Amino acid sequence: MKPVCIRLLFLCIVFPAAAVNAPSALAADAEPIKHHREAIVERLSKVQSIVATFRQETTYTLSPDPDVVALVRGQRANGQHPFEGLYIEQGQFSFLRQQAIYDVTYAPETVQRFQAENAAYLKHTVKTYARDRAESLVVHSKSGHAAGKISDSQKLPDEYPIDVALGLRCNYEQVWLDQSRLASANLNVTDNGLVWLEMPDIDAQGAIHRLQFNPNAGYALVECQYLRNDGFVLAEIECDDFSDYGGLILPMLVKARYMQQSQGRPFTVRSIKLVAMNYSINGSTNTPDRYHLSYPAGALIHESRFDVPLHTATTKSFSDREIFEAAQARDARSGRPSRTPFSRLTWLFGSTAIAALIVLYLYKYHRWTGRGRVAVNTAGPK
Image 1 (cartoon, rainbow, N blue to C red):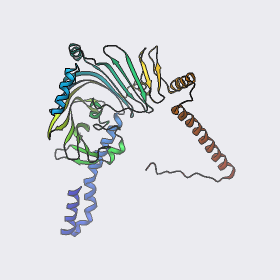
Image 2: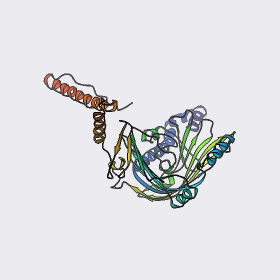
Image 3: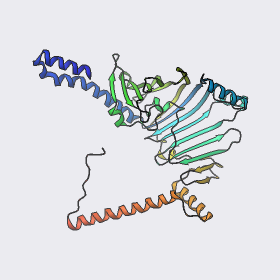
Image 4: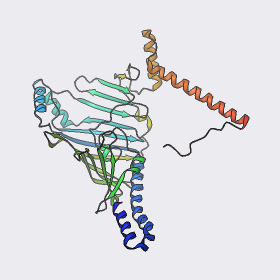
């Protein structure tokens, strides 16, 4: 908006009569900006229920730092195999209103590489992020054992840029993008008509995220950058080969680079080529119950909130009630009082009951006396 301000100041000084028309000139320049912002916010609302099937090629490059080189040399001498070179995975990413599933396996050619190196690997990895909890499942290659974990939260993975390429998340952040954040981001239009959104990183002070959209292609997200506070580009994602899914323009090809510095010199530590095989938008099978993980028969699961082991003889998911009962049974067998997590449940039920009694009292008091109104904040959250 600086050029607009300078132009208006010039009009006011040189042509005082023109100052009368200044508000209309400002509004004329602000209107396209408003339209771009609203279109970008609307685009986010269209990807709130999406399933993407993809194939991903990841190339790892070891740091040239002498300490890292020595560490890797020692690992290899001990029969370990650090990630280096090309690894291919096939997977599916699901998203439903700030809930996510990452379900990936290695492609046959990469499995052959692991087998040739006699290296252990994870045959199957699933991570789910529901509103009430996070879950993970891994199946080990050599033993075939399946191990799961249930916790309040888990770190979102940074290995798969499909979520960033869809405009659901910024690189490395642990929160999902929402409409309010997009609406408050800085917006600039380039000479060739592309739109840049710029917003500060949630965690790293001074770091910024830059998202580029193409208004001429349905506001497709074409590029994402993550810059350190000194301007160094830590991550860069480029989207290409777009397809139209009912008016929603989505990338079929995603290329990503993740950079570091070693001895003052930048190098690409990881590069990714992701090919989207298919997208499903607002599918009838993308329902909330999918975001509680279904464990295979024989899986051993650790429920970290209650510190209780769970077992299943059939493929199934675990409800919170089942988990609470398992924790209660474990405590009864051991003769110890219920742990803090179960006390939290008791507190939750107790506080809910107390709140219900208060509401009932206020309701009756209002009906009997015509007084006792409770003020309601109609302005919404601040």
